[in-house]
Image (cartoon, rainbow, N blue to C red; front, side, top):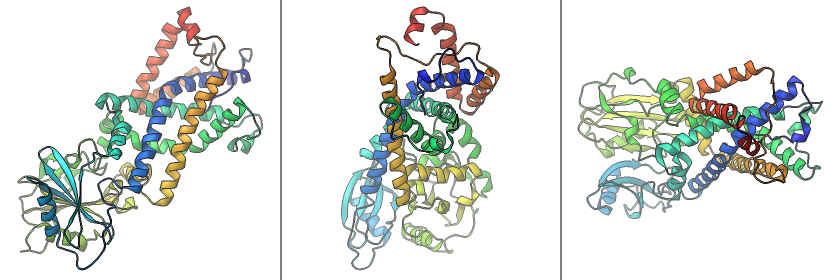
Length: 467
């Protein structure tokens, strides 16, 4: 994510290194044209979601109560939530993370999902909130699809993939030369004008590049092509490990709309089905399999503090107890756990923990928590600085272009492509590697290369505009 002054590399400089430098700069420029608006959007919406989650929560989980007396039975709290939403059905219980916070119930009515906050000591209903319908969710929709559905998802996936190209070319341009050494890690604050902007852009871009790659990979792993069809499909937890019948729906059915709430490694895994004699020992034999007893059992097997309990849906539905750092249940992704219980026998049909994930799925569990700022105060601070840095690097790239733009209007002022560039075979191999790793980025690079070679370079009027 580094730009370079065209006066530093002239057309008379015909060494192989200088030509490769100018070629990298040109691709950096073109990638930035598409990527910059998306990076700014992702950073702004990500920062907004982070602080909404910290200050207000997503579904009312930060509503405070005074811990007085005994905690009421979960079924009593559930009944109060159901009464608050006429004709509603309770489908989920979210245990409070602390003694002075409200218990949360999701109540579905028709096509709506309502979150009801209940005082766990008095069973008083404190608030009713539409499920994922606040500013957090608006920002989340913009962040994921630009509010235009699948088309937006693909556009953002292309931008995220091309940002990999932007990072690679930017680091190549920034790489220490001419005895600069460690000084490239510190901006030259004594510089003025465009040189100062360039120094800040290059240095900050280099510092955030590793974290930016991690954020891009974790974000791309949710995307519709690279994520859904490639890495997620290959790293989904195999339901065949369970000695239980399987239903016709996947774990993704527990997501609300476009919100990603189910652990990444389980989204495409089929749900187990109730109604057999399979499974491991769960609730004591003869114990009624109801909300109170399943919630109590969750505590017995290690679910303390905040956890989620989804009630069975349909005749073959299961009770699902889960803790997921991605859903702000904890600050430790290695404690993520999902347990399914037969609604008739109380036996454990599945118990998936962090240790059961594939290597990549483990990386995603940690990466998503890091991406969302769920791992504690340090994570919130790091993500805030990171998002502000991404915004600055993006804007500074535009500022540098504006400061060097030609006086004559009607030209884009793209870096010139050197003639007879050496090492072109290596560039082709890099392009093929990017295409295989990130298909949409590969298709975009091929399209841009075709347009640049077959159209822009052959039509004088267009060549002047894009030169």
